[in-house]
Length: 354
Image (cartoon, rainbow, N blue to C red; front, top):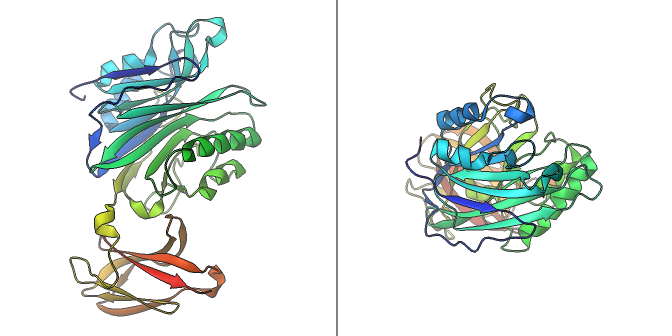
């Protein structure tokens, strides 16, 4: 149980909160979770059971889907109840108002350790989809750097509907900020990672949270995902996808570390604390290691999109190692080489001519 909670409740079709609270200050590593709470009137466990799951996993920020609020199906404000039971701030956004002829609503929300700095909401009209949907963004800081966190719940009918909804979300998302802003998006996407609709996000630079063996979670139901961008700004410290009977959707969580640009974007010819070096010679990336190390070496665009991998978590001896940029990548211009060496990060800009 956390030791406090606040509230922020968004209703109405186009309401944007004016609350700018001096909170939501988090360290560089945060435990994010997405959870479809398909409970009680939806046919699964109780909301008390849902609260117990959240308290046990203890996320810092929890994106919630399938949330009733004082409607004909459920007379209670579910997110407020969960906020009270977990001592977390709650932020609700209606996807459907006057739900099933009642004065209540149905939608998505966040539970978070601190109230958000600011809030935005996107209404996604029904169109050809079976139901209207919404996206909700809260703004926080991690290690004093701004981070945007988004939750949504996509249509369950067709891939075309889901693609259309994601296209609207990406346009809305990119209407403020840039592609280099650190962003997390989490949802019950009602889509496996390989579905064509999810390409809308990956084309926009988003990367799936994966397990230690490289599998895309969730491994059981395959429709609940956490994605992040730009890839070069984030490191996955731990993940989990435990099974609970409280809902027929299982929570998915990930501890993500935001990499500090002042320590990761090193200058030309500089070294990290362990005196490892990157040098560039034509199409070759040369890595000098002072000791035997676990190394991943990747190439990114300057907007943070991963171009390709030269070394994936392999042990390399001390000394010089040379990697060639494959001609098959068919890229040119300014790029960034990023090496993760025993958990430390070293980067260097380079110009690729092929």
